[in-house]
Image 1: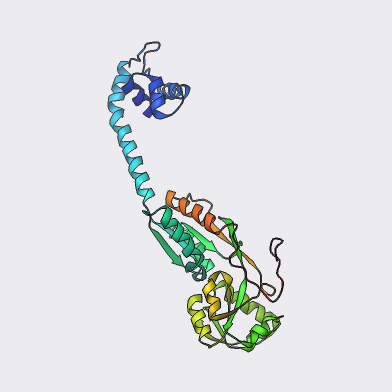
Image 2 (image 1 turned 180 degrees about the horizontal axis):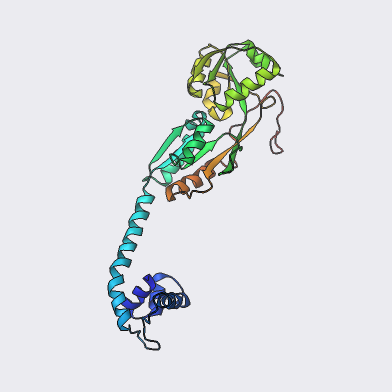
Length: 305
C-alpha cells in the first residue's frame, strides 16, 4: 500500500522505488500483489507517466491518510523506544563494580538514555528477565534454564578477605576448614557465593560460624577491615584500592573459577537501547579478566598462570 501510494504521488514506479529505497522490480511486484489481493486494476499499463484507473484514484485518495498515519505511528514508536529506559538485573556483588564500569561507558556513548538497575540473586534475576521487569541480566555462571540465552563475558575467582597482617595470609590454605576456624562475615543466605562456600564446608565436615550477614560485599569489606572477622566472596567485587586495607588471597585452587555472562530471554527481542547496552557490556567486560587474583597456588586460566 505504501509503494502504491508513493507511486501514485510521484507518477512513477521507478521514482517510488528510489524514494522507498527498494529496487524497481520490487516496487512493481508490490503494486501487482496489491492488485491481485483487491481483484482490481489500479494503474493503466504502458503509460508514462503512470496513470491511475478510477479504482486506483479512489484507493489512493482513501489510502493516503492511512499510510501517512501508519508512518507517523512507526516514527513515534521508534522515538519512544529509543528513549525508553534500560533495566539491568545483576547480583549485588556486581552492581557496584562490573555493572558500574559498563554504565559509565554507556552514559558516555548514549547520554540521553536512562538506566535502571535491579539487584537480586540469580533466581531473582531469571524471574525479572522472564516477566519483563528487566531487559537483560548479568549472572555469575553459565547454568541457565533452556528459555534463556547466555553470552559469556568474563571469569572471576573467589577470594579470602582478611584484615591486614592476618595469620591466614601466611598460611598454606589447602581446605576451607582452615578459614572456618575464624569468625565469618558473609552475604545473606541464598546468594551464590555463600551457598558455594557453605556446601564446601559441609562437605569437609567442618563446623563454622557466621557472625554477621550483610547485604553488600562493599559493606562486608568495611567490617573485615575493622577486624571483626574474615570473608569469602567473588573477586569481581574488589577494586585495586582494596589491597591497601585488606588482605586478599585467591581461593581459585579450592573453589570454582566462574564464567560470568549476560542472560536474555530467547523469546523476547531487546529494545534498541537495551541492544546498545548489551553491546557496551560486551565491549567493556568481554575478553578482559580483571577479576582473577594472584594466589599462593598457581592457577592456570586459558593457558596463562
